[in-house]
Every structure is written in C-alpha cells, then in structure tokens.
Amino acid sequence: MSTAIVGLVALQEGSTPGLFQINTGLSIWTLIIFLVLLGVLYKFAYPHILGAADARERRLREVLEAAARDRAEAERLLEEQRRDLANARQQVQQMVAEGKQAAERARAEMLDQARREQEELVERTRRELAREREMLLAALRDEAVDLSLAAASKLVEKRLGSQEDRELVHAYLQRAAGNGGARGVA
Image (tube, rainbow, N blue to C red; front, top):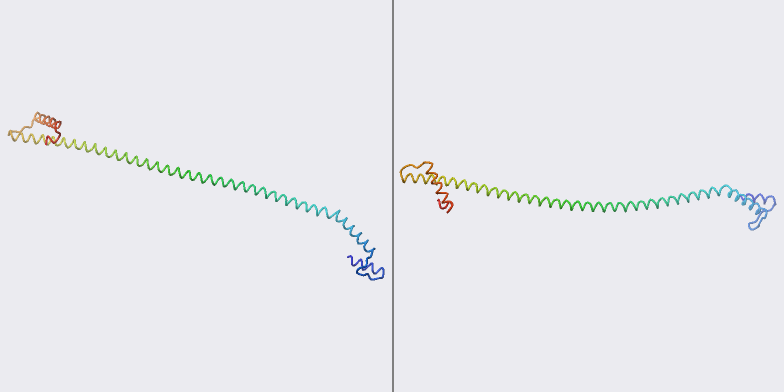
C-alpha cells in the first residue's frame, strides 16, 4: 500500500523518487496512518487480543491446578490402595496362620479321639476277655464237677447226681480256686 502512495506522490511532483531520497510529505502521511491504525487497534483489537490471552492464561492455570489436584488425589488414592493391599496381605497371612492352627487343632483332636477310642476298645476287649475267661472257668468248673461226679460214681459204682453232691463238689472247687486257682483243680 505504501508503494502505491509513493508512486502517486511521485507523479504529482513530477519526479521519480530515488531509493535513498527522503520524502517528508510521504513520511508524515505514513506516520499519521500508522498512528491512526495503532489507535484503532489499541481501542478495538488489543482488548480482545489481551482478553483472549488472559482467558487462555487463566484456563491454562486452571488446567494446571486441576492437574496438580488430580495428581495429589491420585497419589493419595495410590497410597490408600497400597495400605489396603498391605492390610489385605496381612489379613491373608493371618487367615493362613489361623487355618494352619485350626488344622493342627483338628489333627490333635482327631489323634486324641483315636487314642481314646483305641483305649476304650482295648479296655472293652479286656473286659470281654475277662468275662469270657470267667465263663470258661465256670464252664470248666461245671465240667470238672460233672467229671468228678462221673468219676466218683464209677468208683462207688453208683450214680451220684443229687443236688447235694453237686453243691459239695462246687464248694470244694471254690476252695481249690481260692488256694491255687484253676491249676489246682485241673
């Protein structure tokens, strides 16, 4: 635009301008146009440009502050998750230890119960054996009584079978069992 103005001014004056010649009229008009343009820009454009720059700066500051808050929140949550994870690990270890202890207690209880049952079985077997022994001894005594009566009746040649004879032999066997047991009878 300024070359066109220079060309118009040169035509009016009738000379061709040189590259290093200063035209004062042209310089004054250029300065006036520049100042008017600067005033218009200062009045209308600069407030909008500066407002947009300020708004952008505020948005950037807000975004940075929000990012800082989010980062702090994320760090807090991460620390909280680490604590929760540590607590969960501790609880799992505690539960495993309690499970092991419970298993040991159950094992010990089962062993104790097995020992008690074994002792009861041994005791029951002993009682049954003692009862069977008593029954065998009683049967052996009865057999001995019958044999004694049979032998006595052969010797006397008469049959002794009365209840009185049986009681007499039983009393004898009881005395013999008291002195020497079944060995003395046999």
